[in-house]
View 1 (cartoon, rainbow, N blue to C red):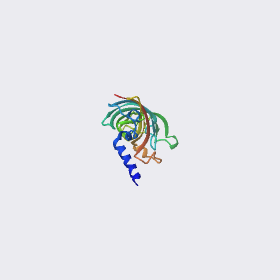
View 2: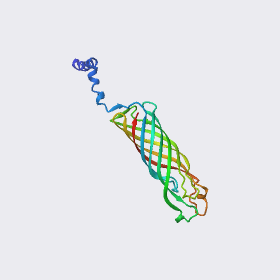
View 3: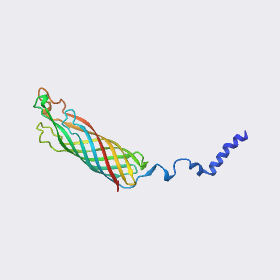
View 4: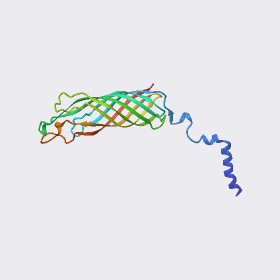
Length: 226
């Protein structure tokens, strides 16, 4: 009985006398920890991407194409960042002529240039640190998209100017303390509106005056914390 009581008492005495020995077994020494503090400062990123649009039910909205741009992120706290950016999209679209027979209505695709003026809110999922050089994040993006006119389209359709928004998720992979590669995927929501000519005639192009459209958008970039 006394032996059984002495054993836990001995361990308790050892723990109180040498707490450093036990603590050394928990976690990682700072030099070998997988977590490292993010460098302080804001970041500037050059981006390129692939926009996977389908143009909506009719196909006259912006379709797929490549994008490129720049963004600047302001670090609001250890984990939260606010950003501004501009993207230029070399996209395509279809042309639909509602005055033609159904089999002959659709032509294209033709080029559709779109400029995106964006704002971002991103949250670093590992707080103010990286994990093995990775900093995963989630966030939201929104702004205004401006499309150039398409002279070949005489149907009355015009994308014009559209507000857009959507979720975003991705990661940064740090090369050193400040230089990093960025990869993210977005869901781009905007509302497409159709002219009255699309609802006219015996065989209208569409019964919808407007519709919400979702397009995946993959973006990569090279950034620098300054």
